[in-house]
Image (cartoon, rainbow, N blue to C red; front, side, top):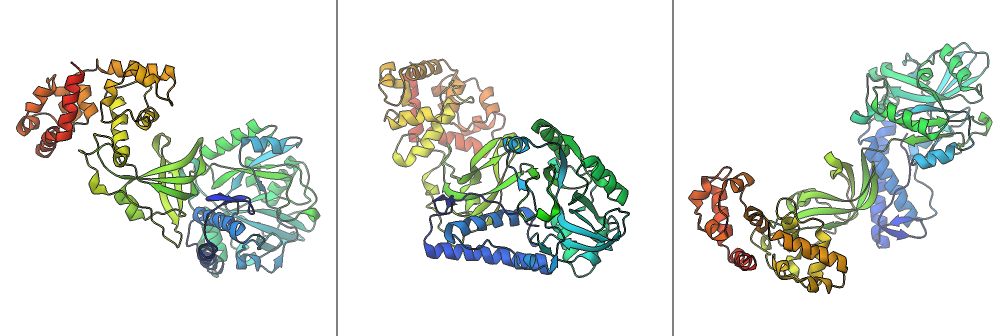
Length: 554
């Protein structure tokens, strides 16, 4: 069944105890109704036709968002539940209590304290059911539904070979709870993810006709209300009845380290089913006391998702060193592996315009290579499209902003960060924030004006400590000793590295005498690029920078 948990949004809402968008009542009602309608449309297809029109991950994420908005803007209202999921007419002989979801290792350790014996099993990503036997014969298979009542799936159970139609048992009646799952071959959760297995199982169970997929379903029993208390005895008897898969996947654990080891192992090793975490089992109370949502004897520790859904708070348009305008989404912070992600760069202004992302939209993000956040998709768009103002792309280019003005701040700062970086002057310990402080103090008028700052002037800047000022002065002084090629890079002349390494020029005067045809003779420099290099070096502001460098380095 679709899972429901809470997530965060935009601004603090004290009544709902969650972060809520700052919307007018009219807008809030419109946004909530739009999302409510979409969820209901998906529910009808899912429950009436057995067809999933959306991935489990997207549905779950938007269901979470709806719950947040419901608490923000409709406090005290009844939680939303898919109508057909609650309309099951068949009562469970023992209620489905569900399992508590634990967020992290520390929460697992706290939950385990004082509970022994404990066992861990994989948390299969499937569909929960009750199996009800009388006199050894299967009389009912019931979907979980709302935990008290569900749909009668007994006829479907006749077509699932892994469900015994008769069992040898001493106690009568027999009630078991478990997970219908899609049988896989060497499925690796770490690399393959969920492959939408849950929706495939649910679809097969809810279609009016019998799907060929029923033959590929397995059953994993994770609860035997009023069964034998010792897990080894329970597993042995279940295996004898024909439910043997659990025995190989139930492990005794004494502490959180052992749980974490099994969780990591099952996440990476090939398995015969899809999983989304582990479940730790203790000793349950008698089945007569089970109620939905009231389970103190078992808990789940899910895997960290490979991608998570969050809300766009705002959109920034940074201007790079060469004048290109990018787009960065500021997000409601989310955890991905060991990283807290609050921003994601989506590339060019053109891409942002094509994606049409505005504050309030819900997006899915993941980590790309080297742990860099990336945008995977937009999963929900708010109805009111308040697009942020966009910089004039024509105002910024490769030959703009060598001098500081408020409008040029972004590109000017990007040029400074570049020139102090490893590929240019390689200044140690001089970061973006260092340049920001100098700009804020009014000490930088053009790209190389830092060369004229004295040690005393640096020490007099309020936001810079004396020790930091001395370090800046030291690095600025050392930069004068850098070879000529590095100063060419610092200025941003668009010469390919292989061409720059091939030239023997050691002064600006010789570099400026080169014509386009001469640049074309160098590696990696075609006709177009040669023309760009000449145009760059002839630009009036570039010439001013070169003149200043020639005088400063005498």
